[in-house]
Length: 450
Image (cartoon, rainbow, N blue to C red; front, side, top):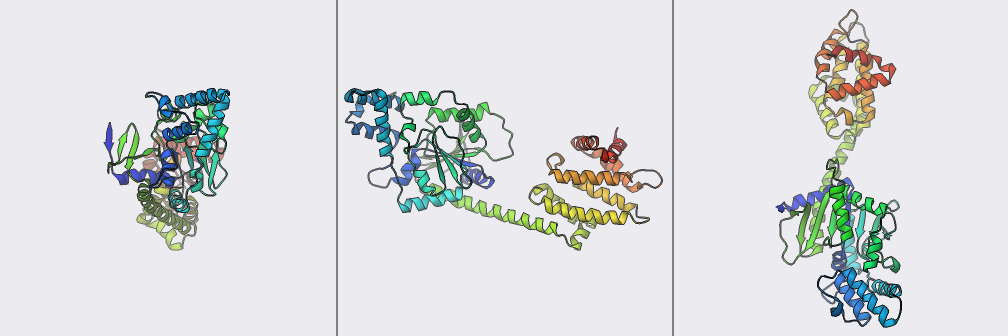
């Protein structure tokens, strides 16, 4: 079942991962081939071509063992069996010789022009992790000084400032780590709690871009299946999903969704990357501009002018605008907002303490209620919740219908307090129970108990 989508919409998903900081790459032989191979004889090889080259090296007729229905690991095992018989050595020794030849054949180093071009793409995408089934270190060549090679037995971690490149099937610099034969795959699938948990969780928690890879490896298929079915909680506050780049001679200009994976077809990987990175760069520039705008607001609120404080206190439009900013992006400039709020509340409180200014307690309470009504109370920064709670307890002492109490504040609380969402009332009740010094909040809540 295919569902079409626009190319910009597909690139948007990638851009969201880049901006959020959880884009990961799953890389296959197609990437090495795109980087290394020119018009002449190919240097980087597909799995089929690599095994054929190995057979030539050992003077084995590849067509005799390349039978329809056989997997490449089975063919590799057959190669080892023939090598062992012809050289009168153990199959283990033959496997080691085969892996050494594979290591030699995957000694690939991009030229400076290819390295510069693809380095620019990776700089834009800035992946947080890379998992590859390749034996070569072409990716590390592109990620000069940044790529951190990892073997199958390693953990998917890297030092600060570096990108982990996890070679799922081994790395040529350590031939013994190469996974190629049927026996290698059997040992790879032995119970391994770390790999079984880490791969699907990493995919689940990322925007995963598949490059030069056809989802043909059982180990990888298992990880993708686990990420979607075993860890099937779909609620998330972060971008995630899988996007696959597929090479074809006649690419569909419109991306489409297949089996839960968003597919973008291409004929030239470099051109596809260039188009993608141009779009991502525009999105990153826009996101940076929005972030800088929020930082300016933080500075503005952290050093409020008298005019801003006055507007926040007396002009409903100004207060509404500030609170809308807070609701949209409170974590970005919460420190600045807390300073503005503190200065404004202090000013109102000073006025309320003057003789005959009981109406200012109502203003004080209205400010706090305006904030509560315009934010997600449960997910707000704890410092903001604490400031609101402290303010409610402080003003709560004066709220009431009796002599010497703030009647206006009492009427406001009686009307607006009853409309507060139940989760807010529950949290305020918890705060008053766990903090005996906040007993005035308990009194306020008792006033609106039904």
